[in-house]
Length: 303
Figure 1: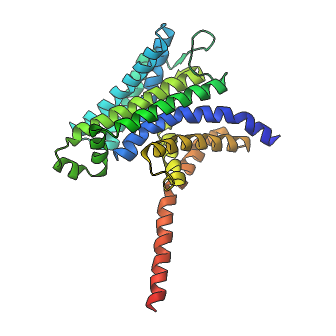
Figure 2: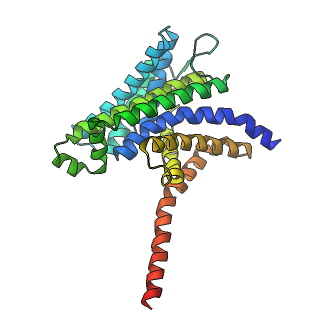
Figure 3: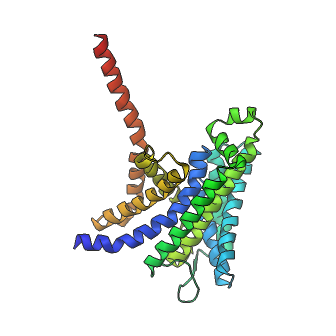
């Protein structure tokens, strides 16, 4: 019975993992590539979903709605970047300020706290009613996005963004305008978050102003899980990006498992925070373990 119920929940977990994996890819750009702690995503994912929902409800073709969601998320990232690079506001605070402002902006976009888009009335790309098709569509988005990211970060401009995250001082010494590369990274990252919001809105059939609450935790979970489990196995950049999406899928599989085991849904946020904390701590604990054994071995040889 338990195994059957888990198998029935897998398509939904995979579909959500793939959709949120796109958001995690955006977060990967800021968190891993750019080394920028960006909290804008809790707001920009709703902005992308709200813009897409509004356009779909007004009969705008789906490609335009998705492109507009990307642009809306990118604009949010641009604001965060300008607050940091032009006004000198620290990265975390700049993201918080943008996220806070987006709450009101999202309400203005939607006109109310929730917008519904029914798969019965509109040609949605993904829907919880058709999880198999949703998995395939979301997978297609993931493949295309990873391909584009792999190409872009291999270009001179993409390498400049990566260099900025690796060593900003050295990048400036090499003539790279690190302010502009930070702006570009934040724009691209939050643009992907906007696409994820557009797809997630269609999957759920609605968007609410609080839909993005805790999105940063899910995104970090995907990035960290992928890095911890596959970091040493995957050296290729494209495979590292793929590991982020796999991390998102594993996160939702674990969530489905604990719900099936009887976890109160009110405790999901607490569980998610603890889950991410554990994976964040693993690399540090491994370093302490290796350092302890190295020190112990050195003491034995010295004796």
